[in-house]
Image 1 (cartoon, rainbow, N blue to C red):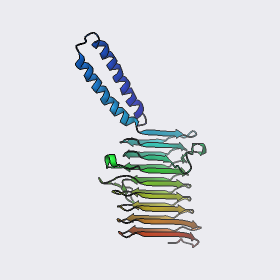
Image 2 (cartoon, helix red, strand yellow; image 1 turned 180 degrees about the vertical axis):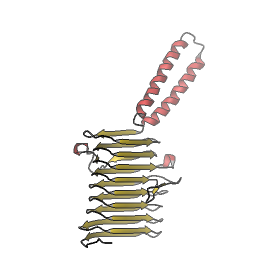
Image 3 (cartoon, rainbow, N blue to C red; image 1 turned 180 degrees about the horizontal axis):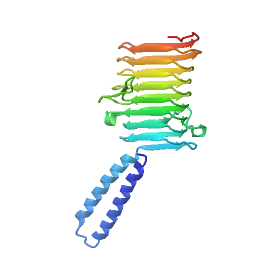
Image 4 (cartoon, rainbow, N blue to C red; image 1 turned 135 degrees about the vertical axis):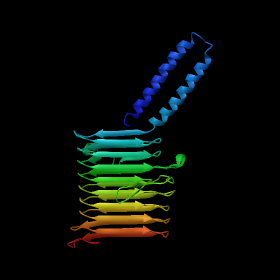
Length: 288
């Protein structure tokens, strides 16, 4: 997949060479004008295919002497972009962009971090991002921006998908894009599952996971804009936030403390709902 651009350019150069050879032969027999027209048509077809392929961009910068980096990328669409730097060892990256005009990479809030260890900086991390739109020319931009600093983090994100708690991918044929995610992880052994899907409206998740051993599950579905702002400053939290229904919902959650919090929040209604929680848990055994 990483050599998609080079392969398509190779096809164009090959076609040009054949056309050049054909015109050389035609010069000897000017009556073969039909062959000229045929080869010119074939060249335009190849050029069109190449332009669509080249419109997708992949930039992955290796930081340091990382080993055993496993990358799987699928870009099926136009003007998609992947731009990130990777440090550490034994990391796995899976990115599917079955859409147009979408982005996966470093966050624009602080820019690329290749000079500071990498946008993905650590060992044994898994990052899987799936973007899908079915609206053709009406697809809007999906964005997944991230920074991960730590080890053994397991991240899966879906835009145009519902992801179950067991990491199953569910989608339909009414995905229009326009979803936004920003994830910043500064810890280890975190599990984060985030998904967004809607027919027309736009959903947004900003998640700062600044501790370790946290479990985070967010799901945003249906029409009506949905917003989640989540900040975990401590360890061991278990957070589930589910938003659905045709209304606009928002949730802002900040968790602190020596002990962890178990939070289950559901905003699934056709009436707008807003929720805000700032909690510092100092109770032995945890809070809820």
